[in-house]
Amino acid sequence: MTTVRLNSADPVSIDTDALIVGFRSGQEGPRAATGAETLDAAFGGKLSASLAAVAFSGKAGEVAKLPTFGAIAAPLLVAVGLGDSTDLEGLRRAAGAAVRSLAGTARAALALPADSPQEAEAVALGGLLGAYAFSRYRTNGEQKAPVSELTVVSGQPENVAARAGVLAEAVTLVRDLVNTPPSDLWPAKFAEIAEQVGVKAGLSVEVLDDKQLKDGGYGGLIGVGQGSANPPRLVRLSYSHPEAAKTLAFVGKGITFDSGGLSLKPSASMDWMKSDMGGAGAVFGALVGIARLGLPVNAVGYLCLAENLPSGTAQRPSDVLHSYSGKTVEVLDTDAEGRLVLMDGIARAAEDNPDVIVDVATLTGAQIVALGWRTAGVMSNDDAVRELVVEVAGTAGEGAWGMPLPEELRKGLDSPIADIANLQPERWGSMLAAGIFLKEFVPDGVRWAHIDMAGPAFNKGEPHGYTPKGGTGAITRTLIGLAERHASI
Image 1 (tube, rainbow, N blue to C red):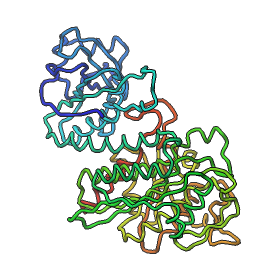
Image 2: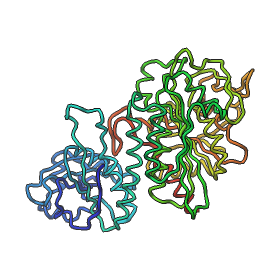
Image 3: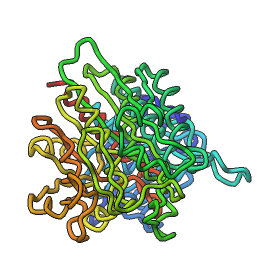
Image 4: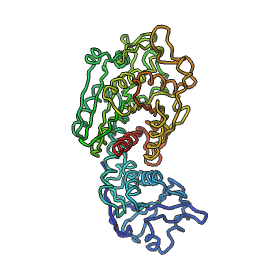
């Protein structure tokens, strides 16, 4: 894991392998941002001109490298664009892009704007998230190691770096789980990891196996998992604080691999379905982060773990499941399985009497159609809760957009033989219909929000900012942020 520390020394004199400096764009070319005032003098007043000569403009995310020839202590200068304005997310992305470009370099210092605790944390967190690599299965040694030691040039207190480190560790935990192939992460294995890591972080952990789930009436989890040789699990993680006045419950979809079941997916839609446990991963990472930060709030997390495979024992379209809440569900499509495990987790979470329940899931392809790969959809039975989730996600730099739950879509979930069907016959509005289905399992009077992050959980494209290719760890920081907000109420 990459380490980070703060240092208030002049960046010109810092002993490091590479010095990262922020530049803003302008009509007259790139200009040094706060934190790099002394550098231009060290380069004889020609630094901006040198960067302009290599076509560096300072636009957001742009990176250029120059040898320093002894003008400063670091042998390499890395210029990263901040654009024409800088918010905290801009700093995180700039730091991440610059550090990511330095794979193979051991040490780097970041002389980006860090005059406030919030800015210093953003720089540190972006750098740490950018210094990520998943190398568990690499044997040829060709992958360059990420930067192992980061220094943020700032006079802010050291606890700023410590908090950034906790957040980065939580996200890294989730990224690693999402990137792990399903051959090494089946429900029982995920539960084992959650128990080991959770207990070490100070969480109480309870695991229900398939027999306990069947005896307890968790029909959704049993139904989805019955086609696999790897049976389902339900993991309950809990954190309590003696000064807590609020309790939050998080429920995560944890399909360790989703083939679609008997309603088999086409191969092009299946090759990245190891990421279908990203919601449970985010809940797990958030609970670990909340515990390590020692937030004065109570938090409970449910990991709804199953593997959705076709076999002679798999659930069939037209089967009827008996959910934990007591409601019956007709299964029209076995590939609409995430909502079936979540319905059990939500109903169980309500028994903890939380102030709010938030479920997180890579739930529908319709989310990607509606909002793209980087923006999650947020639905809720309470307008204030929906707006809070969107606001906290935005503060964390995790894109989210509030969506409605139109009452007229409920009729499409009617079943002639059960209380509700798991799919509406029309594809239109299917992200919203999935949210409406989940709402049916939230008891009256319980505030609830649903986050559909099918796209944001896994980056199939090129890396950008602090986001790598593959597992992103999306929504982990949003859940931690929600806990922080409730801790302050």
